[in-house]
Amino acid sequence: MAAHNPDNERIKRQYFVFLKEAKRQSEDSVDAAAKALARFEADTRYRDFRAFHFEQAVAFKRRLATQESHTTGETISKATQHATLAHLKRFFQWLAIQPGYRSRLRYTDAEYFNLSEKDSRVATARRARPAPTLEQVRHVIGFMPTRTEIELRDRALVAFTILTGIRDRALASLKLKHVDLAGTSVFQDAREVRTKFSKSFKTYFFPVGGDVRQIVEDWVGWLRQEKLWGNDDPLFPATLLKVGETRRFEVVGLARGHWSTAAPIRAVFRRAFEAAGLPYFNPHSFRSTLVQLGQTLCKDPEQFKAWSQNLGHEGVLTTFVSYGGVASRRQGQIMQALAKSTVRPPRNADVVAQAVLDAMRSAGLLLELSCSESDLTDTLRLD
Image 1 (cartoon, one colour):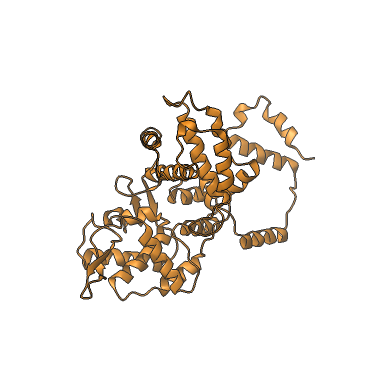
Image 2 (cartoon, one colour; image 1 turned 120 degrees about the vertical axis):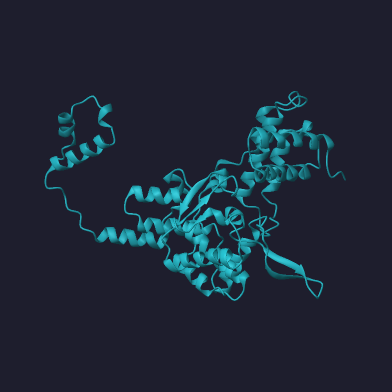
């Protein structure tokens, strides 16, 4: 049986170039589209895309819902189904306007890749992501050994992640020059650091404890003074492997180079949490931990805005929506505290009305109102 279709391969190559160069999508996004198309072609036995019919989309969608995941062994999740079908829908919409395909395909046939409204809501629903408490992170850090330079690196790696909330891909590409210990900050320079959306921004150390910060300072000092490394050397170098006497690769120390991927970093986290007797939390979950800490420490909108910017978010809404869910236990504590609080009614309705006016004036809303302040005050009176 054929394992590919030459015509399909040629048009797919054009589409991938379109995604990367015209739509400016990352390699990961292009790979995701390629995987979705490969899954669809295997299902249709590599039938030519020119012969596409909406019934193929309906049949593929039905079979996709019953397939098992290679990772979990369970039925593919609604989220994976939604993402796969979305890639296919966009491809066939693009294909329908390409020379040689326009007369064969109908643009609207791509709509048959849509999930039902119910399944779409399930697939796109936001769910609370598990995150460790700050106490758990500190416990893990304190439990990590420090006998070898590999172990020193691993402990500093976990400490630096909670100190800065940095993503693991950026962490793997940081250099010593990006860390300013005197300024208590790290500059994520997109020219050299693999940041999300290639954004450059400065992150100041989060207030997670002087002992955590000291671990990072000691690590940076050790690299500079003991290893004599310079500004362009990696902050967290890869592990150096060499063939030993047994003719097998053995760990011999630190390589003077970066990790090529973030997978070894996640492996360090897994080992650290398992050794401490706790469930595994990936590096990204530390960002949720820091958001929860910010919700506790920040006393006004300006402080939380600064906290949000420190995570690399341009808008506070991103922090709230993606990471800012209140844990169920904390939610109960807040509601119980509110129930016990005493709410005193205002002694004078004019005081309330004036407070509203002041707030509207400071926000510039009064400029858009045609009525006078006196009329508005009468309207806002509660008596």
